[in-house]
Length: 270
Image 1 (cartoon, rainbow, N blue to C red):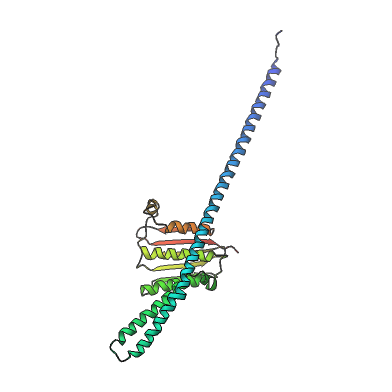
Image 2 (cartoon, one colour; image 1 turned 30 degrees about the horizontal axis):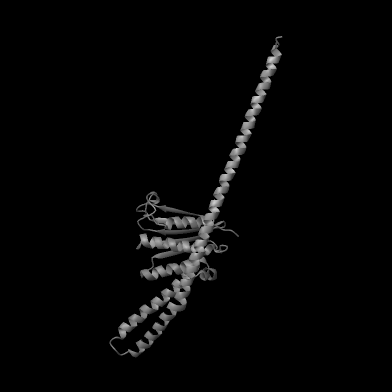
């Protein structure tokens, strides 16, 4: 017995088949969408975990560094500084005793040099101590650092501008930022030893922008970034990582023959 299909039955079969295909396509599309969304969420979670792990490592490194620097600061203040003060006192006595002798001029010169060393050691101890930032604030600590550079250079080669109303950053963020400034200044002194250095603290409502600029020879960022690990320095990488730890960013504006400008932008979190 042979079944015969009318035109309406064929049309119905086509419609039903089309609907099934559409439903199947929609189902596959939904599955792909869910898979893609979960994949993106998984990748974001992995990225977040990696960043959190990097922050933990960097935080531990900074804590160790701060403890070491604090220990050095205490030793400079309590031991080296005290010994230099004793030497300075004895030189004062020696200067009085040799007032009418030919060596009095040399004793006076030695006394002047010793007094300079005592002041430098005290300032260095303050710049390394974590307590100094909490007591005096970031601008004063940076000013102390610049004074130490000028004293070593024998002339005024640094300039500090503070714009806006200064505010304190929360937690230990100012300590980290001071260490970043010290590293940027050391880089400037290393690569532009005779060039003037200008530092600007711009206290904006939503962020603190800190600029360290010098008129040195500058460099090519692409060339430095392409250097192998054994020939590349850690300074740029350390500054960028620490800025990320503070939730901010660090960028460089430089080119050969055009000087260098380091811009640190750290968000202000009330």
